[in-house]
Image (cartoon, rainbow, N blue to C red; front, side, top):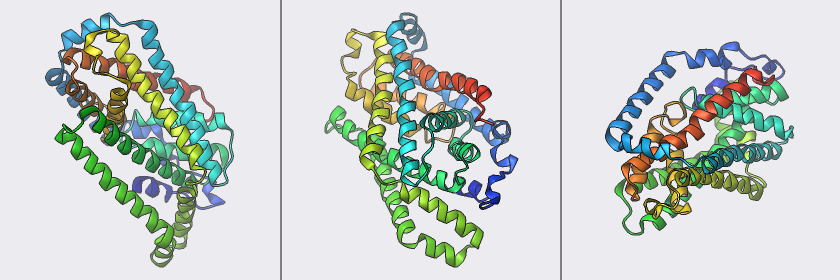
Length: 344
């Protein structure tokens, strides 16, 4: 989020804020800079490690050759439904801070930000989302990034809470050390996020007023307005959040059954296990490669093997799932990006 704030600080305050520096939003420059290229190199090395160490690739190909296409297509449908849910949630967060804009446009901008996150590391797509909303709807970028910050906090808390509950149900009192470590990290993150919100509410403006310039203070005030003001109508926000995450789990569940539906090898793969595996892969997208590429494949394959799946089936599920959740997003996002008037 500090990265988001630093980029926001490059903008001029209203009314000059309407003129953005081209460098701050140049997708081409972000994609082809050295940091992005290095992150893709790391991702490729992780993928090589996954294919060579964690799974039986020849067995995976056999499962993939026998895929049930109609069931597999349901995975695409389930994943596509996550974007209206997330778009409506962001629309509500924006309404909470006095910004009521067309739902379809808000959803399209959110979709484009996910596309960008597949191409560049460190969630730069979140900054791009704020830029597009500013460009198309004249919303302060600091305020919109504040709502995205609140959205990320809500997602993070729900992901780790769900990870803990489903992990306890799936593994019982045999919780693996790796799962315990991730739970500990989640608890630490929850405490830190709560501390940040409390600091912003009670001390943030006073601290910035004392130590920052008037320009930076103005940017912070808008960011704080967006972040703290988002926590209203939480029953609506959380409803859309749960719908999105259930659709994510349904995607993974559909992929598994498209590859081995009715097989005894899926006996341990309940919808609850799919939820656990899905939140695990969501946590792994935090790894600073584009879209968690490499890290998600490795972590998810390991989790599926750990819950009792054959290595070949686990690898096949991960490959076919990432075709839906990563590569299909890259292709469809590119189409929208190059055809949408809002993207540039």
